Length: 350
Image (cartoon, rainbow, N blue to C red; front, side):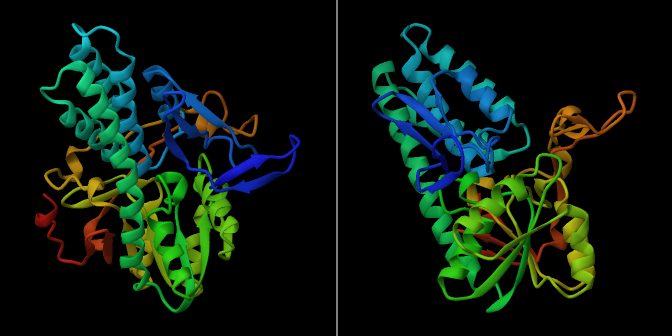
């Protein structure tokens, strides 16, 4: 799944997990995604503060992975609490801290709340056992969900063609396999000759650093392009479909990495199908786009690049992490429960 260092130099491919619970050390293990593709490092996360920091700085990222991280975080909090008297208060406070680290991605709060529910009305010792069991089940289910989602979406891709994707919705964004890239992997496994255009995804380059890495590892043809090149390539007839992941899907919009909306508009103009791949846990069907807080990240992500200043110090920066793509621009939403098509009715997901 990630790269390991050999003699401190050239990395080699390893099939280890991206995010998991280590029973021997009683802690969360996670690949630090900020270092890929040139360096492989596994974080040993033993406190809620360390987990919150890893999530905020995107060492752990991707909607399904955040759901798993949130679930393991509650289990970690429960197992770390030494006072039975303050047990519920401590776990509740830690859960709230985790949820607040990434306000737009709904899977994080979903994972946290699901484990909290498994602990309800149990004495502390039993609650600790149930929390870890529930968290491990969420991680296991995530893998199975992505595999099923991939199978459902693979049929939508052409037998031979080029697919555009944005940011990273692969195994690194999940426990394994991936959502949007899971569809590509499943199509490739079926024998479809798919190649991928991976947008670099400014400002943190998740597309070039992570998506291109994953696909190259799997020997699926991939070419990285700058984000603003996508529309021109659509105009040139070099893109057959667009497929992206999602961080939250409301009743009227898909929230995904900033730049997704732009690709959707261009795809619509050029009559190219635009697909979203996401598990049911990413849906927030009671909410509307106007209800969602879109995360704004630091100026430094934009104003600095590879140690160099790229924006004059006196010039402000707007750095939204996500945008909202109206559902009328989406050709289909691929889930583990099947593919949803317009006009969208998500009632069965409630």
